[in-house]
Length: 62
Image 1 (tube, rainbow, N blue to C red):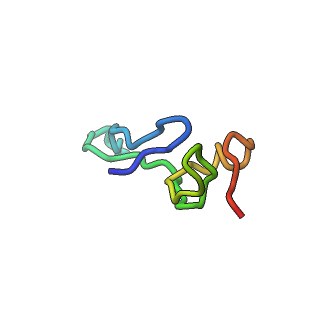
Image 2: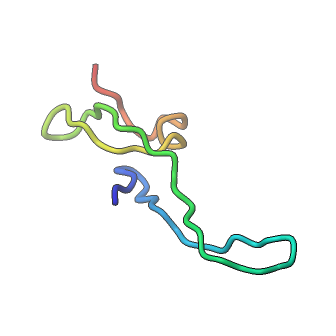
C-alpha cells in the first residue's frame, strides 16, 4: 500500500457503525495522487496526499 511521500499518511482502520450500533471493520484511505516531485536525485513520480500538495509542502517538477 502506498503512503504519502511527505507526511507518511497511509490507510487506517476503524468501524462502520450501523443504526443498531452494530460494528463492522472498514478502512479509511487518504486521498493520494501520483505526481512528479522534485527530489535531490531529480524529478521522480511519488504518491503525495492532497493536503501536502495544497499546503505547498512538496515542490512539483515541471
